[in-house]
Length: 463
Image 1: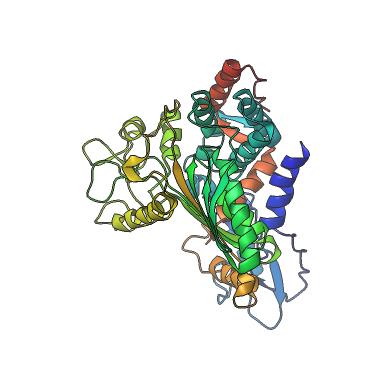
Image 2: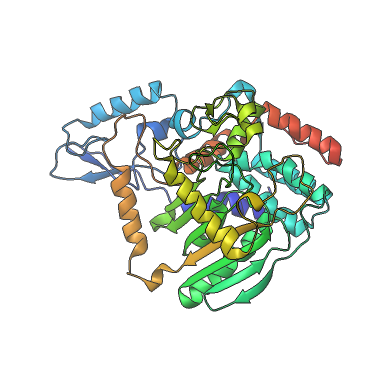
């Protein structure tokens, strides 16, 4: 593994998001257990190799505690029995809830993290992208897969290659600052790779936040920039609160419309807590990102009701119909189930990104295509960094305390613990580490093989 990927995917992720493991406390006669956010592994997380741990904290003079309810009278033996039985029956929080898109083991090909990154760098360089830029883009895509967002990792590589070959994106372009104040900047991405533009903008926002407390940077003429959380974690690494948003090609229907007018328009917020813990929200303002539907279509599997509309304006479960119609539903679904809230959030992102940055917006953005576009995307993006030191002291302490409160709330089901934003990704990273690689669907491996033949690069190696 190369030095950059070691620092990116091992050291950084562990340092920022996990922190040091707590020592196992002694369990002498009469000792009781209190579950805290920094310690003892819960049933589902233990069953799924959780990234963050819940360990035991010995407390005296109290009744034995239950992992689900600290006020209960269950003994440690009963708790352990609960843990074992839950671990045996749970189908995995990762697979049954957050990661419904995961493939069965028989449909997977395991690829080492560094090998996935090597393959992506090679492909991008073959598409006439400078090595430094190729590494930035590949780092982001690899991190997306490592965190479990397979729709935004290797799955996106072919689209980038197609855009580069059609000159719809300039792999060598460097962003430039058009207008600047101590706290703000307006940037021209010059049609460069999304990761190159995004890294430049967030680093600029962080610099301003360190100097004046807040940095707000908007960019026009950018391209698909991957997972929004990549940039907010960059701010977290610098001790800042980060926010990141982007508009996209029209893929979402406004409430009461049967045609798309807004993008999936993701939002991410990241904030550092104690001991490497952190809050990392990364969400589309649609029910799902279009990549989720693309993944289901790749696997020839249906989609859940509420993800997308068909051409008649009604929800569909056919992944191919949903992809061809390109009309995702907003967060919340229909008007009856408050979908107008997701619609409002998507419009807000459009305002901050497309309108404020002077980029394309709404239906002015080119149509979504995986095959490579014939024109620039001119996407608008927004990057914000906030220095918590400018506000009330003890931000990280209070955020850690808030996480502890949330993670220790009584569970409706012991196999489904309460998580905070970023925990599902930490679970997946631990899973990847344990398995020794990224589990790609067999159809994704096939696509990589075809891409290697087309570009003349070394094929991706499956473990």
